[in-house]
Each structure stands twice: as structure tokens, then as C-alpha cells.
Amino acid sequence: MNHSEKIGTSNNHDKTQTTEITVSAYYKVHSEDRQIFIDAVIPEMIAANELEGCIYYAFSQDLTDENTFHLLEGWKDEEAYERHENSETFLKALSTVVKNVRILDREGVRYDIAKIHIDDPREKVLE
Image (cartoon, rainbow, N blue to C red; front, side, top):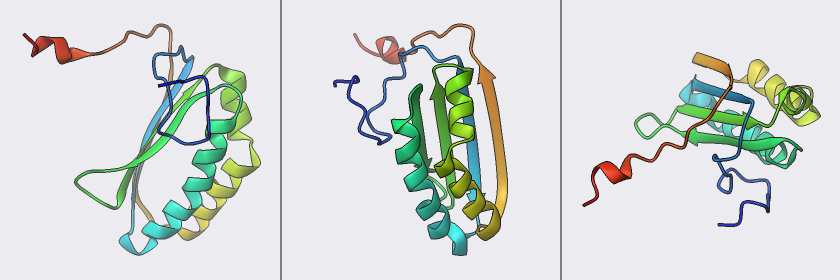
């Protein structure tokens, strides 16, 4: 896969690139507000992936609960992270979600990364 071309989707990122900031979050939304949430975050996800310094920005639906969504962000540095946090598309999505979606549970954590290690445990089961 050619990771040098970013087309603004979450399925073409390279997590082996160094990130100084990673964000991991989940959102459990009310079932009646699920589509509002999806419609708000898709344009933001596309726009975030196009920002300079975005290594990855991906939402995914939980495999066991269709109303729970996971977010994973990777930013080259503080400047890239702040650029995103203050971007028009982020603030629009945030406003839509805060004002129109009943968030039943949410947790988000920002990690300032000192060093990354590639994790591939497949060798443990291959002969």
C-alpha cells in the first residue's frame, strides 16, 4: 500500500509513522441519534485526514454494539493537533454532536508519545 498518498479516508493510514500525539476515545450514543452522529463525524474524519500533520484519524463502529464508536487519532506534533482542534470542520462536528446527539457514555485520552514500537504478534502462532 502506498502511504504517501492521503485521500482523506481512514482506511489508508500508516501507523508506523512517528506520532507525538495519539488520541483514543469512544462514544456510546443513543440509538435514535446514531445517524446524526455518523453524519456529523464522516465529513470531519475526511477533512482531518487531509490536514498537514495528520498521521491517522479513524472512527470505527464497535463490533458488539452498533451505537458505540471508537476514535483513534495520530498527530505528527502539537502544532498539527492544535490545527485540527481549532479547524472549522472539527468545531462544526463538535457543535452538531454536542447539541443534537445524546452521548450515553464517552471517554477520551490523549497520549503524548515518547517512543513507538511496532506490534505484530503473528509470529507467535506461525511455524
